[in-house]
Length: 556
Image (cartoon, rainbow, N blue to C red; front, side):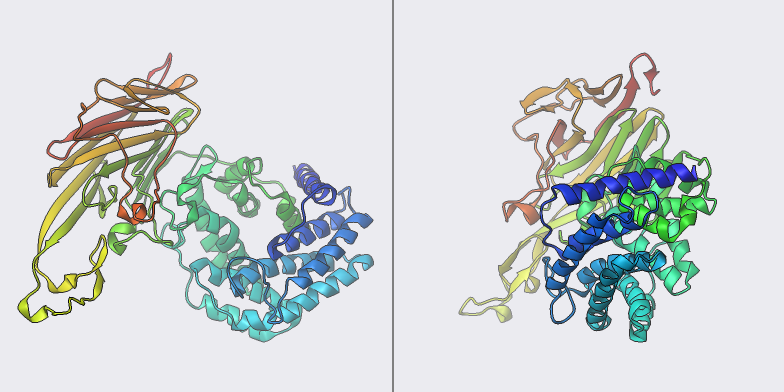
């Protein structure tokens, strides 16, 4: 096994370098330029690489080094990218620089001395700006602290080490479940976990390794069929598919230490998309123990509630996610850095995936259902939301202005020069209660409403690639379920939804994202195969979502 692993990652890294040397377009961003230098150095210093001591990687690295110097401003920070004069963005490059310098020092080749020296000069020029620099996202603290710890070792500047400790003194933003405050698989994989592992080694902080290990176990529980759940994320990946490849070497690190859960995850992730063999090779050259054997691994069923308002069940045949952790109800707005995804439920049965269930209402443009409260009792998950919108009364006499010049205020759904806070209002309310009852072959969904009489539509969006039957055809692979059931089939597996709930001009089968999107002409609507079940809030909706496999009866 050790020889097989080392051979596999070396061969894959060799192919990455070959593509860069042959026909890769020129790099313009500092992070990519540094990544190319790292790739050349790793392959040239790997004993079993076909590029070992070959002149081409050195020639390319020397050219890329010149380019990297040109991207460094007088401040020491790098200039390309959308964040201007950014210490944390520069730190991504500097972290790769530190690893590359360590590779060159670990098994020195005299021919690479000038590259090593040039990287040291870049590090020295950057150190002051990174020591003094600030951040603007939670994960940046760990990225910049990791770079500072490495820069301290390379440059001997102890201010950098102390600054790293200052960032860490804020406390790592991880909850009891091992989920970072940004809840992002992307930033856990690429920033927080690798940075904290570096800091654990550089600053002798084994507690930081424990945090990463907890996060990796949370990621395992949030993984299904090689995809990590992102519906609860506060970052860009909340509406994206994120695969496990970037976590592979992190899992392997703990698998080598004997963790059977991480071993099972590492084996699968090492053949997943976005696996980085260059980084795996660089880490293994510096820490050969990463290439040693790992346990066979254990993959266990999951039934877990996360404190953030997320429920996850998974076994070999089925996966269920219920999401009640949106930030929008508490923040009062949709914004970057908040968990805004209105998907309430995801369900996989075999090879068929209900990617998203959402509840859309026409209620003052306030958007789709996002739970304010989420709780579980006797196996039933209850999600509740209370909305209100006001009609405003005339201003009191003392508040009136003859010139009509009133302050602009945001009243919860829109802004106007109306001095809303000084007016009495008549509130229109709508309470929505959704109960999710997991069953052996799927879920039963019960939705009750109190308050205003408005139309709603439940949207069920499926992962493309299957066949949708049943319902009234709306075109484009979309149906309205008026009566009976709709079935989405992939191979021998299917998910059946029903019963239908009628139709009418006063209950359109459509999703409404809310004024937060539409006033700018935007949307967060989904595409692909979809089923709509419509109604009005004057009556209860009961919907069954059932997984079946042909020849196996209900369930599997």
